[in-house]
Image (cartoon, rainbow, N blue to C red; front, top):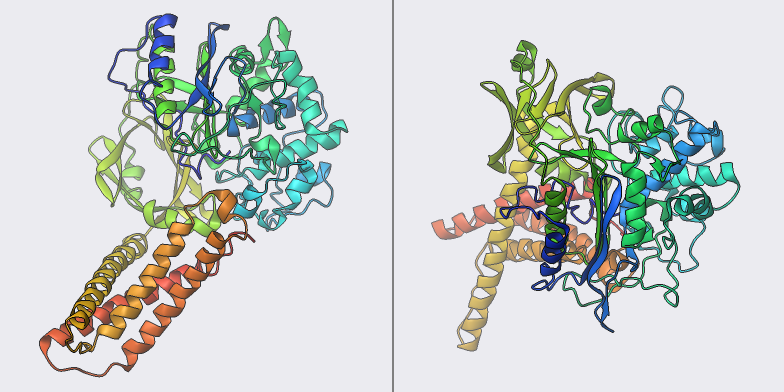
Length: 630
């Protein structure tokens, strides 16, 4: 569920493992088991593999619990995080096929009075399809909502009420992709209203029971009847409490390897299992393909569908599925396009090293007999692209609006035409540029991929005269062209501020050590003219660093009013106040004699100016004064 917040591992992870792939199931089992021989960060895993529509592997590996020591088995329940969302879309499509809803229905048709803000409501209402494809424009859930852990658990309608203020369309619905966990929960609420019973009961009757997912549950498992894996911190030994997700349909399913094997058979059977059709093939195909985004309308097959998305690997094969993460658990569910083969991998710790290693092995096994797909022919880059495309671009669809400044700083790229390729490079990593080749006048594929993953689109109505949609990442990006000054200015100031802050800390530490040493030796400690500025600015930097460090705590800690979260809030305010005091001191400081004092004072004033600019920016974006528990 928190895949992006927890640095999602993505379906493309580790596709070029140096070792040859496993050739047999026994070899696959052995090599998966070996990953736990030296693992210290992930206790256990559940792995399911379906090949040619048949379950060939459903097993647990390692430990479900560290203490008391409990081996993981095929029946052990693991959290599958955002991989749960696909089941929401599946049931919604069942209802669509029965004429009970349409993907184009506005929210209000089924939930009259449901609160959300959409400046384009008259012409572009938020529709069910936008909620399933993450194109509503809504901000993702707040830390306060993520930290909610009501053990009742909360009814879905009550859970949705926790974050109503964030349901604001920041751009025209149906254009840009921005991952939002609330969207599928709203669809689940619509399903509840249509069917007249709780969502969990609907899915149980319509999908879990018919598919044979006998122990899967959206609620906390009854551990007197089944074994459920304990989730752990990155050290692999410190357990985490069970998380009662406030919007369960978005990421709360517990399922065993046996359950996931049954679900994979539904996916690889394209809605049909054991001769029983749960969803028509045409409706399943609609789940695989995005429609309600500029990326989809531009003809990018990798555009996010109805909680399924296609992801090419570096060997040219395409996997379709959905990954997921909760605090302490990671999940990957995917099948190989054009085959009836797929896998599900769930692990019970945050550290993804073992998770990625298992995904590599399973993918390698399923591809072991497949030839590398032939690359389609490239075409010359169109003259209009050569003329208009080069320049600087910035991301314009942040998942968390309050953290948009980070996307803005670190997502800047420069696009250039280099011979027959389009080169996209970050100024922070010019050597790590991506190269694309044209497949037509506006679409491009990676040099190793078969499908187009980048397209130039028109979005002038939403302020993007020249725009790019890109789907090579886990979920995709929307970029807008801007000037070099607008692109590099904030980044340059941020880098300069970082250097000045580092210098302020060094001066603060060395100056304090020097004063202490002189006092211990009984010597006078005359204060340099610039010393007050360096001390105030250094103290401001310390306060900001303390605030940022506190935000690295667990969501349960920073999403509630705790000493850590309140301390982060106070430290952020202290940073702004100390910066203001440093600015006042800089303005009051008179001219000084001696080139060393003048140089120190000048450097201190520059550092203070940069801190003032940084503080102003953080106040403007709402970071200073951010009560993460509110």
